Length: 132
Image 1 (cartoon, rainbow, N blue to C red):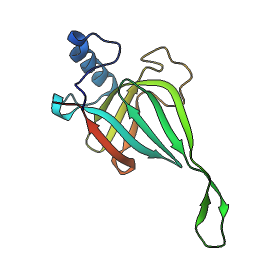
Image 2 (tube, rainbow, N blue to C red):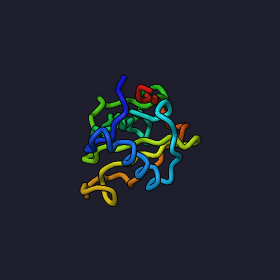
Image 3 (cartoon, rainbow, N blue to C red):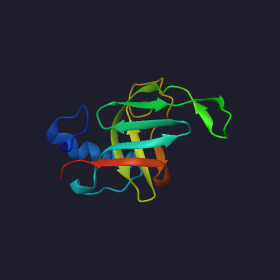
Image 4 (spheres, rainbow, N blue to C red):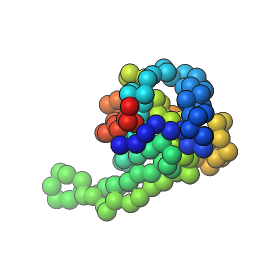
């Protein structure tokens, strides 16, 4: 488990920055026990992981056609990534909002994700919270 932090911010400023990010994302401000550290989720044929303080990363498993059976054949998985670093993940009840350092919050201009972006609960595979 990991203690709560906000990347690029001194520990004594983390709480204030987290509240600023929540306001920007229009997300609820919750107590330490409810703060999300990481989120694994499905996005089409990709499975992505958003971890606070790390770049977005994932696995792509493409289908290569059909076998003789009706099940599609799978190609080997391939890693995918995005240059944006996750700054915060907010639980809104029916979805998770991920805030990164891409535009308009930060300087990363070549992220393929909106900022913030929303992940519906139904696409969530795993949620890890910070230590309370």
